[in-house]
Length: 628
Image (cartoon, rainbow, N blue to C red; front, side, top):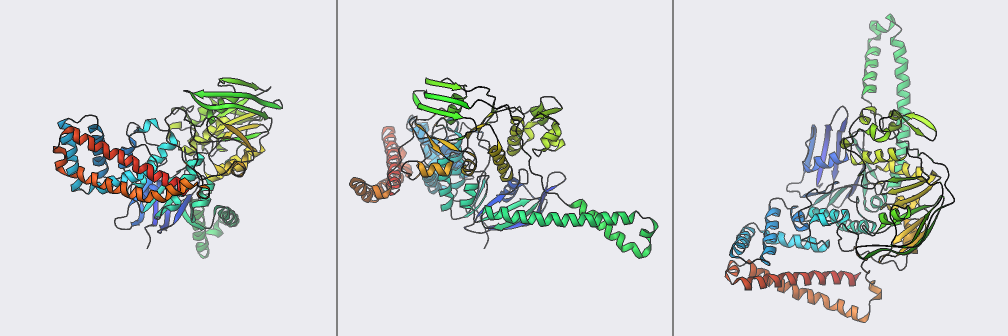
């Protein structure tokens, strides 16, 4: 029995329908990847499934009482809220009450005034009446499992950790259907691997949108394509889809060509005059009218972007020479004693966790930052173009035209003058869209706009910081082809594993404590060459400032020492004792008579419970480490 299904669903914004009689169903245990061009309507479909939008026609069926959770593409704007409050907000109705109780209990450890005790007691009674303790435990379990800092404001976390918090909010309701929109945006490579494992263990129905081909290949049990309003289910993996889709489009093109030829012949006939209007030819006239209507309703496939990069004159053979450079932030080493020679034509990728110093190293290498020690020398005849990861350089009030051309009507690409409207058409911007303000663009459109502006700059050293976010798969592959044909030098930060494999010739890996090491090849080559590959351990969350050194990885189960094996055998018993003590303390605190005791006694017991919960979380974490 399906978890949910749609039947002949249609919705339109403007002339064309984003969904035109679309149908599909999601079954338990399925992991379906929704693919399609930017602007095709993928996010709209997810919003229809959650009930956030309503269709123009058609039906949506959901199992009665179905629990649906979503992970939106955009990061939350309420950055003053704590992690606990955001995770709890995934429980509609009860979440606000649980967050209020958590905050009141936390305040009680600092201020045991009678008013504070009465507030906690009131909230406890309300939670008991609404079965709140079960969900309180659920929130704490999710926070522990995702290693989230419960009382940290969201503003102090990086973009990757904010995505983890949103995933916690999605998982806390124990959903039967999980809808994810670009879940890997802002995540580093280690966190993406962690996310893969989490989603592989999810037993409900999963529908997700992603441009990450490695994630798609590993997770998806089938593909669901949204193309010109129609949904098509494709069994098999992504390479098989690409091959079958190309064959289908070839057949479609032949059919359309034959149709257009027949229509042209009939148009010639109708213009012959009186013969075409005789009674015995009325059927042919009606058939022509039907052909015209069919041609009018045909939706052409969205064209492919045509990317072309303005080439500068050739740089010197040696592009960058870095000798024993070091750089620290707030006393923590980001780069330590690092040397590198970048030669003309090198394509170098940077790999490391969020906040490890990748963007800092880019700035050091091109002279935007001065190292604390060591020396950086730039080669001759360098012309540098920089792709901005955070898109802060886009003026939301400017039009697309002015963003690229700055008020001019033409741009020059490789010595050829082109009208800016035609040039933007290569990046899939229509004339009407080109005159729209930047603030009206989607994430994918903004990325294409940045590329359009970047490629008008003559450059023989291209610096790209996360260029693949929000690009559809076809445009992503075209960008790969462009960079492979690029004759200059490339420095690239990306968390897209397939993109790194296909584009770069070597990688700089950040290995913690300021150590940066160069490896030949792409991401997969780095995995093979790095010393002692081990299970992924996600580092503790960091604030907006660069992070402390990376935590050491655990030993694999086969390499446990005698003491570790002994500890592993004793941990289940220890955890059972801690859980029993935790239940006893929670039962004591739930009792209304608890808060009639002296304030010092109440505070002491609450602190004991928090210490016990921290000890239990540490025991679970240690168990996971030892088991590998």
